[in-house]
Length: 248
Image (cartoon, rainbow, N blue to C red; front, side, top):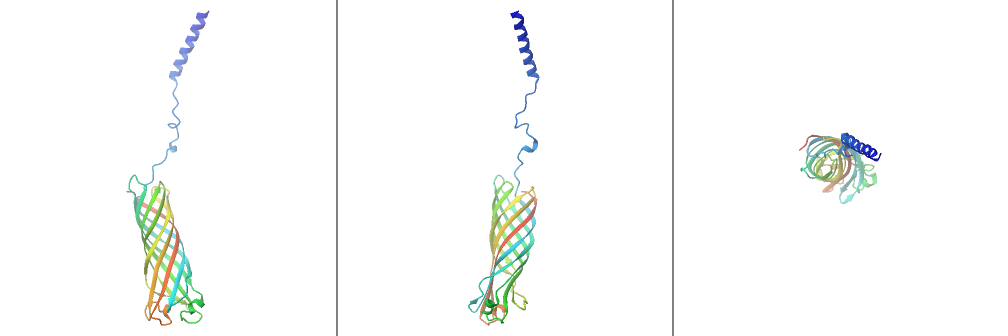
């Protein structure tokens, strides 16, 4: 009897081993994960791109004449325009270097109080007013990309339209394009290999327009002083969308 039981047990063990050999071994969890489980390749930031941008500017302008100043009065307005740039991103490095330029239409405008402007010797009841219809910058960009997120700084040259008037009658005289400098920074996010969106801040200083008596912007020189001047600075907050044509 013991011999029969032993034989049966030996047969069951042998059958179990045969069946176990025929079964598929389950794949490790990491190998059986769905295709979208795997992390996508890092986005490339190098390339030539164009885009659009828009935002809001706020700053200050100061009129000075014969040693008397209006003090800085507020200016503000909207901007909208186009962008062109080139990025270089060394392979294997998160650093991104580039050059970017833009040209924006602007509604930037502001005026002093009548009392402040009166101290310059202008007609009674008039306020000093400054506006800018357009602004362009040409800047270097430098930053570091955390895969699809680029944090950058930027600095370069700025040039803008500079117009002055007494209000009333608010007949603007152009002092001509005025050059200056700009600096700032921002963050840019890549949604695809070619499409990105950014938010940035720029400080722009267009310097001071000198107004010799009887020449340019004479409304700032109504008192007949030998030299008068008008200055303008801006802080810009802009958003933009860029399309990169090729990656290198």
